Image 1 (cartoon, rainbow, N blue to C red):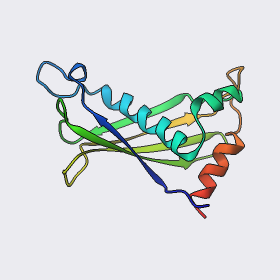
Image 2: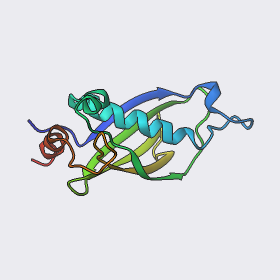
Image 3: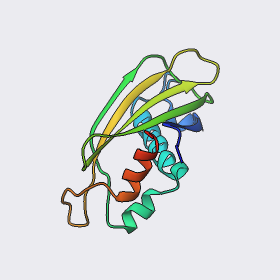
Image 4: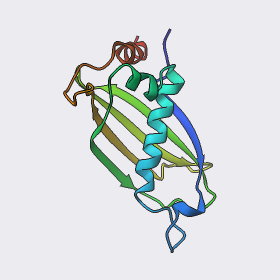
Length: 138
């Protein structure tokens, strides 16, 4: 089975996510990246909870965002997420945030994650995650 490389999540900007100028506060984009990442796994049939129960976590070791245009209260947004293996231990997620009806993304970014075992040591990505990633490249 081949899975889509890019997965989509929908959110609506809440008032609490905006600043005094009515613009989404920049740090919220990283929260939305997490929404995209967890939804990516869930849509592929495996959750963060299942991964943690298997003894593996995926802490963020690098994060980057580029802000192109402002999102505002009550905007309907789409988070487009793509995962790419980097090494046997590292995984990269790329994100784009789109407002409904716009021709260009509002923001783009990426996070890099290292697979860690229960003792906080680097370990191989779980076989389930490697299989999910491989199914996108077949």
